[in-house]
Length: 185
Image 1 (tube, one colour):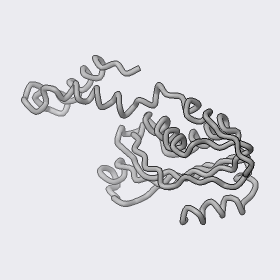
Image 2 (cartoon, one colour; image 1 turned 120 degrees about the horizontal axis):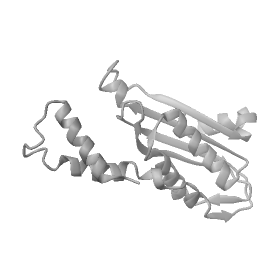
Image 3 (cartoon, helix red, strand yellow; image 1 turned 60 degrees about the vertical axis):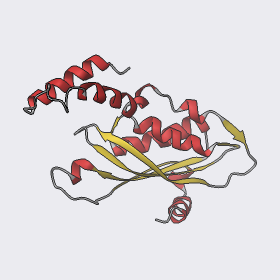
């Protein structure tokens, strides 16, 4: 649970630490604004992906289902800077499918936490397998990390790509290739 008072205290200390006057007009309400923003950005800490992925529909098909180009924003746990990009999800149903919006909601559950891209990719794939029990799931994330673009090496536009394969995607390279072809990679 977000503790607004602690966040406000920390923001005041941070502003003082960088030499700012916390009483100047533009900063007076900044600690409260940051606390409210953090509630939104890190709301996934309290959410369970199962709440979205357990609402399924019965189907006779076991054909590949893909939801691609799901935009996400997250925060790197190493530098507390944003990383953002696109998530592509594929799964092979085993008698049931989930509403497509539920895949995007699942991405949000995990993205709205302090994260590592590699961990985020695996968490989404694992949640699909746990709650939907498909024959297989595959998740690909392409993201730009502000810790690489605005500080450090300063290489804007560079993309980090991660891939998590579960079930049939681990054993059937043709399924993985089909997924990659259908998402345009």
